[in-house]
Length: 110
Image (cartoon, rainbow, N blue to C red; front, side):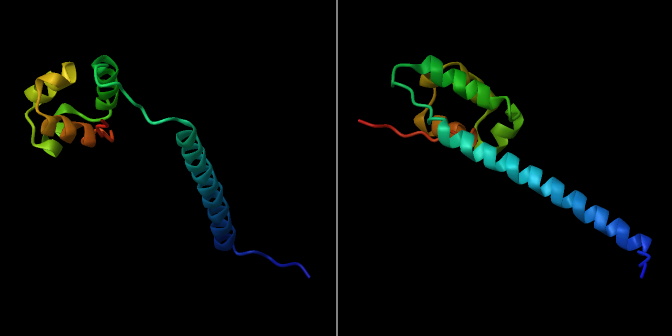
């Protein structure tokens, strides 16, 4: 007995297969990202090594516009610019707000 498939059913089947392939790819990428982040240590900086800290902040800043950072933190763009050049020239509250918005987890150990 020969069954003739409805073209709509065939189209839906193709779409399901395509979605399954795409979902598999997305999940694989997500898994690789998680595995990579597990292997990558958290950035740490000695208290007097502000050059590395500033470089990391500037790199992370590339992912967000200065205007967005200003809106999210309620800190003026001129203050943020000064902070990204030299964090010691700003208040701890402002520094922590910007660092948090850039996805940095900051803590101070004695």
